[in-house]
Length: 152
Length: 310
Image 1 (cartoon, rainbow over the protein chains, first blue to last red):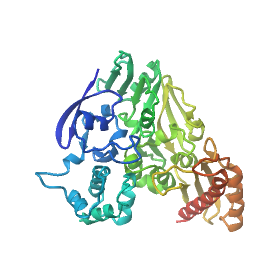
Image 2: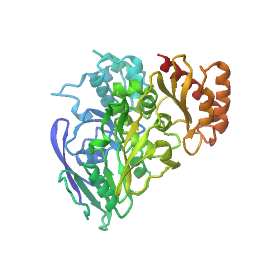
Image 3: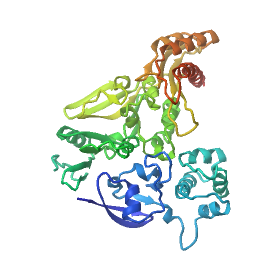
Image 4: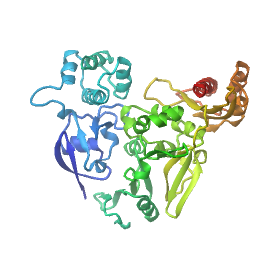
């Protein structure tokens, strides 16, 4: 038996079926085919599955799908609009702020949540904010530079 | 299947069966205290109270069986409010997240130590979800908010299927991972007492990494000074150096009546180390934890003292 949940994903009304133990991450990837959100550790340590839920940055692996009724969920798929990359996505490209790319969707959502809450963060604030997003390729400097390039 | 009357008619209930037809986990999200208590009282199998889930959900991934019933308390208003009382104290709902607590400027001003302790837990992502009540009920010896809560003399409002009771925070954790709460009870909120003038608290911890790590030693100090700058009330609590947080009464007594002069601080540091009973593991040796706890407690005391004088 599955449960029917109504939520909003990237601004669109959305309905999905889930079990009580399913995570939001599983539903996003397997039911809604929104595979931009990556699965890393599955325990909230790596930040690869970061999404914005009701305005708060969360790990989708630490949210139960049954909790998401009426929730507003934003994933990396919702960043670009009308074929135009979000300024953060463009800045990540311009700064070569990714190599293997597994951490990138999570880092983009974390950066978006940062700039939504603090439009003018300094470098220290950026580094602390993205401490929950692990990247094993870049050494973080280029990521920090990309985010700093988007500070208005 | 559903044994609990749905009085409000608003709350959410769901259930999942395995292929064999057995129940995997029931989930319910009551919206009133009475409904949570009814759900707790009616539960026959394993039941877990669910708030932020940052400690609970990783256990499912690790292979621990989910409980028969999961009760999500986040929709109960009493568990989500931060309220300043007329007499100056605060009520903090048990399901208040770290982010919610840090954003409350009045609370941060009155209790800088407690709020910085909560803020140290995990990443921004974790802060969005992890709750004060969950940090206590998870009963980890290394929980950051717990030493600060105990030092603040916070009390817990506990609701159960047969009524309510109140306990000081230090009575809750009985051993690593275990609390004194009965299966049909949960913590609704914390009460922080009103502050005397010239009071402040501070919390410091040591982690092998600067971020995303768990304390190997920690110290919370909450004190009040008189008009001459002499300490006249003091509470010191140590974390991660024993199976449960250590209420360091003999150490706090050393600071009483002092202005934290160097000689007093030396005796204080020695007493702190004498009270530590840490384990050695891959994250830190018992000797190191014992030494560093004295340094942390000393610095936390100085920080609290200087804040109290401001």
